[in-house]
Length: 315
Image 1: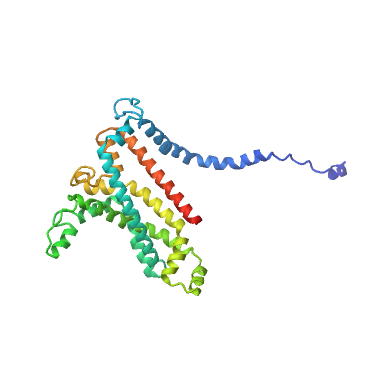
Image 2: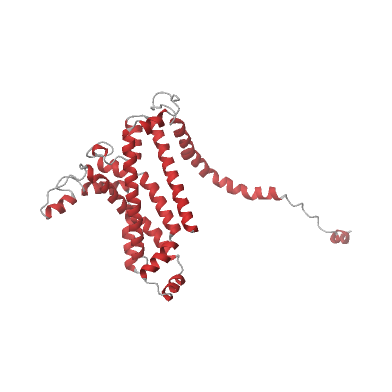
């Protein structure tokens, strides 16, 4: 009897079906994703859908919202002069900020891309504004450009015998000051991204270029810039999105001398205008229409940028 049991081959357990096995393996991953998925839906997807609904209503935060169709968007594009001012200011600000920040970040990356202590210290110094509290930085900028004599800029001018300037109360200075603050605060972040891109370029390309007689400018023009196209695209698009969403600089620096947007709305941008309509005038339905218009503007510009970059890459 014992010999019969030993010689009998073991009964093979039936293998689970492939689809069932994959599901069993995937269940723990889905369970671990549930907390993040809940937060994502609760704090991002649901507010976005609510804002889209309110954009078609006259919701003011007190009365129940009433459906008004496209009235908010029609008023926004064809009747609201402040929205046009905010849109023009935003376009000028974004164009100047993204261009100058990208150029400054690339220049800093080329200057401090090495591994020496000097390069590391300089990269740290330029990156610090990116991780410093925005509120604290904006308060410092407000002190620097204060119209009183204790402001740093006017103190420097007084050393040379010049009269104090009302920086924050002069409309023609508003956009240049906002661009200066944005470039100073954003070039360090772009520099770090560019340094990573530069260090990923194979050294063999430069050796081949030098053997072909390429000078430093030709190596930069025909080797460095083409290799940095993906990095440049990332820096430009993230910079563009961040520049369109500027708020703290306008609200904190210029609110001290005027309403939201500075003197004569010289620094009024889309997000501060959204805040003004939603939380000062309590026109939350109209503010939702501004928010979705801003989203569509950023989406369209980002798609155009990606298409142009892809077309240039295929040339």
